[in-house]
Amino acid sequence: MLLNNDISKGDKERLKQASRDMLAALQDHIGRMREWTKKAATQADVQVFILDNLYRSLPRPPFTEADTDTIAQRVYEYVWQQSASGRGLPTA
Image (cartoon, rainbow, N blue to C red; front, side):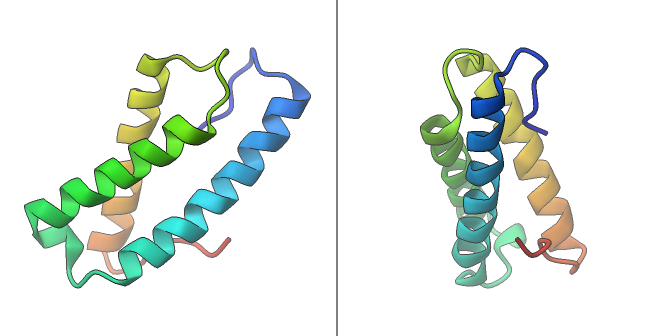
C-alpha cells in the first residue's frame, strides 16, 4: 500500500521496516481491545493510532500530508475488515 514509484531504494527499505513495526504495534494495540470494531470510540482510537504512526514513519518527500491521509484510510479499512471478519492481522 505504501510503495511509490518516486521513492529511493533507501526510503523503500525504511518503509518496509516501518510497515513491519506498524503491523506489530497494531497487533499489540488492537489485541488489548475487546470488539474494537463495534465501538465508535475504539474505532477512532485505531484510526488515530494508524495516522500518528504513518505521520512519524513516512518519508517527506515524496509522501505528502494528503498521501498520508489516504494511506491511513486504506490501512484502517484493511485492518477493520480483517478484524471484523475474525481473520485478524497477518503476522509480521
